[in-house]
Amino acid sequence: MAICQGKDCNRVLEPSTRRERKYCSERCRKTQYSTPCEDCGAPTNGSNGRGPKAPTRCRSCDVRRNRAAGAEHKATVERLWAEGLSAKEIAKRLGWLGKNPGAQLSTLRSRGYDLPHRYSPERCERMAVGAADRMALARAMYAEQKAAA
Image (cartoon, rainbow, N blue to C red; front, side):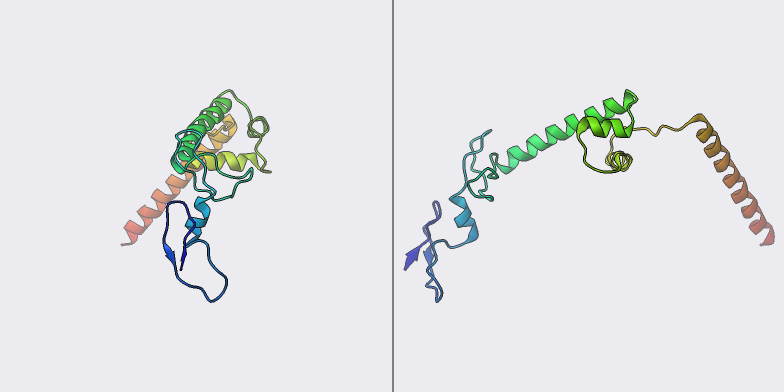
């Protein structure tokens, strides 16, 4: 009978007809690659082995760090937009790789970023007239339906 070689496991492995197993599960195998988190000291998950891609933080510290970076990113984008920079200029300054920075700003708007639309005065007038015309048409149609009934 073989015993699992994972850290702190010591489970008895069932005999295999193929080759001899060292670990009872993938989780036990990956625990040998875990290192202490550089922030809190908790073990990392060891998911990418021991190379340069190995995680340096545990899950909770990684989430905390990403949230802080996200808040900083949001503030930066909102500040640049308020300063009057175009979408293309913001993309260049922040190193965005997409081909359509306007679409990226639209996505950020849907995620709650405060990025008001910048319309020309002429467009604002057209939009107001268009909305008023649509409302008048809807009222007329409603009145016709009511009169017909």
